[in-house]
Image 1 (cartoon, helix red, strand yellow):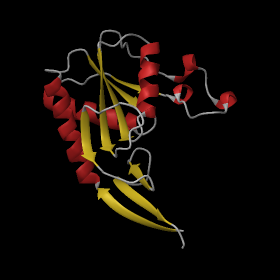
Image 2: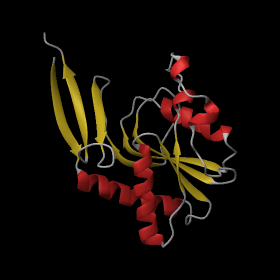
Image 3: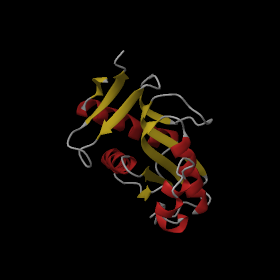
Image 4: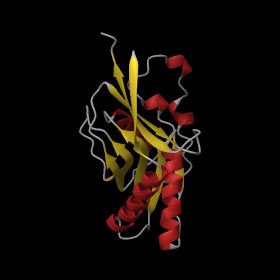
Length: 184
């Protein structure tokens, strides 16, 4: 099987997209009062921290940032014995009740991760509002979920994969689209 790989966003493109999203978050919420950023583990966490840094640079104050592990809330996991208990999973120490929570993730695809994240948040309190910020929106929703803030829309087919590489986790900084071709 051959793979075709194409860079759809480089490090500068990621920086520009996150800068724009940070301005949009501030504008939509008329500041950052009562705004908290919650990164969905794994790559949503460094993206949330970067957004907080851009907001601090422009507003002089950084919103709180939290981490959310949605593993026990996913509906596609079958091995119950390897999933941490819901009470232990979130590692979310932020107060979310009456806050504007901006969920941050790298790629929005079917919407199932976001559904799991919303369930995990609601288990920890009652946010006044939940907003969604994603670096890449690739379409193919299975649930009625729409992002509030998008770095880049990337129409894709189901045979393609999108890989976000971040310096904090990976050895590079780029977004790739990979297409698998059969060997007919």
